[in-house]
Image 1 (cartoon, rainbow, N blue to C red):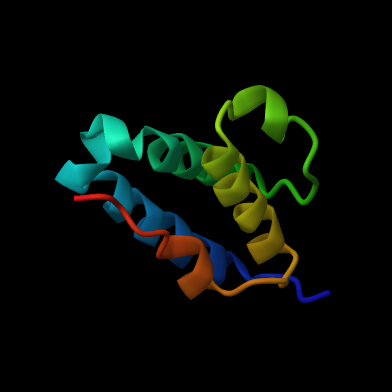
Image 2 (cartoon, rainbow, N blue to C red):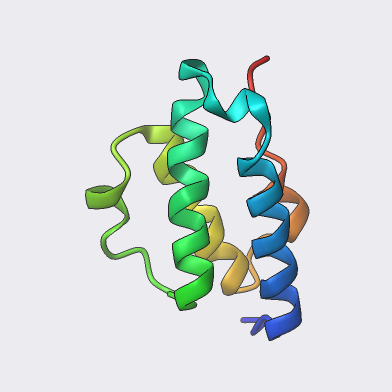
Length: 90
């Protein structure tokens, strides 16, 4: 298991924060992505390395999947590109 550095985590937080500012993120069709990235930010900021509580906080399958990617990123099981580039519907 790779342990992410604070710099790597901060860069992912910055990238996700920028994604959340995208105007398309506010569309109803992207609500699940927004839900997932909002939870992903919390996971990264708290450096949670377990999946506990994700299902309670994310009510959509896509939201849960994005939150799981954040945990996987912290564990070194996926890279920043995979975590930060979930496509939005335009």
